[in-house]
Each structure stands twice: as structure tokens, then as C-alpha cells.
Length: 120
Image (tube, rainbow, N blue to C red; front, side, top):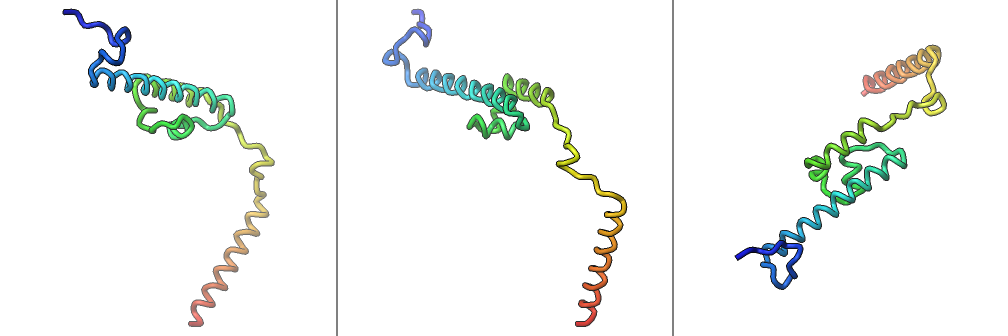
């Protein structure tokens, strides 16, 4: 007796185990498709690509992002992402003079705090 393939049989002729197995396959394919879409979305938006960010965006567990067949896509996207360099407006460089002033102010604050502490 030959057993027909699961795709050609109707749900009524499949055993409960076969129905469950096919549902899991469909769910797995859908989740993996969402992961690939999340990768494309994060690449287009320029957001940082991480396993956690992909999992959140795709609505899947982070475990799935490390599974064979998924991990490779994420790792490639991580390697390919462009890390923006901060501009001078984003992170101003402090002059050595301003750093000396900050240090002197901090030392003065420490002296005052120690004097207050020693009074008690």
C-alpha cells in the first residue's frame, strides 16, 4: 500500500500527527520569511542589525535567529551594514583647556565634600 504525499491528501485523510507536522512546517516557513523581511526592513531603514533587533522586528524568538538557514542571512547583513561615523556636531571634541577646567572643578567639589564629611 503506497502512502500519498501530505500535500495531495485532504486534511480529513491525514492523521492528527501529519496535520500537526504540516502546520508546524507552515509556521516555520512563515517565521523564516518574517525574519528575512525584517532583515530587509532594517537594512533599508539604516537601523543597527542585531539578532535581537531582527527577532523583535519579526516577532520571533531570538533562538530562531541563530538557527541554520537563518543565522547566515543575519550574519551577512551584520557584516554588510554600514557603521555611521559620528560627525563633529554629534560628538563635539573637548579642548584640553576645557578638560583642565572640568578637572579643577571636580577636584574643588571633592574638597568641599570631604570638608563637609569631616565636620560630622
